[in-house]
Length: 118
Length: 113
Image (cartoon, chains in turn purple, red):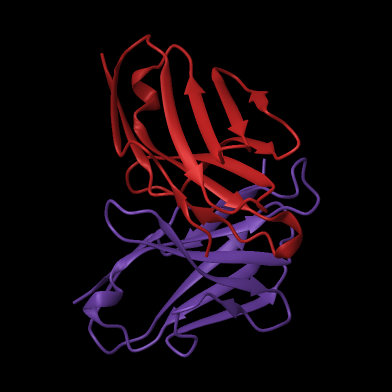
């Protein structure tokens, strides 16, 4: 089945620093990936749609200069949280569609990255 | 984004019983629905999906029912096992508009041995 990985799984950083999270599709090529944020005991909130070779599409209320997304290849999308602050602490999850898979509409999710900003 | 909500935030069932988790959606244009299971500290895991041209779909021990008239979705888990304990989310999307998924609030299922 379609496998999506994320790195790192957990990161702790100081306030004001930037953190990069990687999302990879391991056994398929993904022209579109998605980034979500999840606070404790809450649902997943879509942040942006990452499109290979073009600019990301951000959901309303998500600062594009704060959350930089780069989709440089068909198997890798990165999310950089710039000048991180404690309120950015959250669980960040990516997903990808497998256009060649049995279900082209389903999104397959990575294991998530726990970001803690001190 | 679209509004997708769940009726019951928590659900406790006895091992071996059947579980029913409900979800309401607000966008009548949504044409694809998915149920995910999320264990603590992990990413969501696909369970089952259904397109809007269907009313029912069955998987292994799971059944999804879709009622488009009242914009309601349910997930039935047969013979619930302790390993089914997790948070369950429904998500909706419109397939030809970018496939953005919008998630409901989630139901925490606890299976009592």
